[in-house]
Figure 1: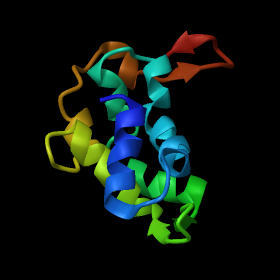
Figure 2: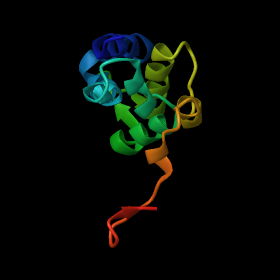
Figure 3: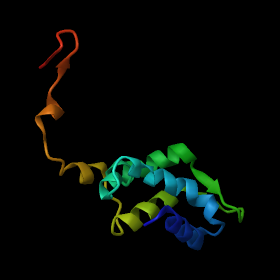
Figure 4: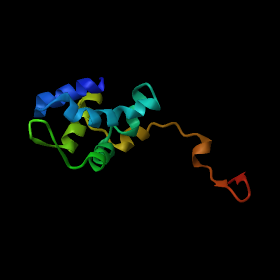
Amino acid sequence: MHTHQHALTSVKKWGGKVEDYQAIHDWFDATKETFADFRHRALRHHSQGIFECERVFGITITNSDGRQVPVRYIGEQHVKEDCGGRIPTVSDWFRNIKRESWMSRGYDVIEDTYT
């Protein structure tokens, strides 16, 4: 779903204008710069991402109708629309990562060797 469509849904739910919500929806999907497919969602489309969004944008926004809307609700709407109506956890996304040897090896900078 395009961020503009997410913003249109926000307008239907809470009033105001698309521009009131666009930056929040753009923030969630900015990770498409990293992965241009569904995998980008593993970085922000989860419960922790919603709380991070709240830290970035504040507890509420005031839309152009003068209504205060909780940022957490906007984030929940975005994630649910993209994730089949649910809000996954970080663990839900990461539990299926295939383990590679480089992921758990240390690197000794002083010795310039792997441990």
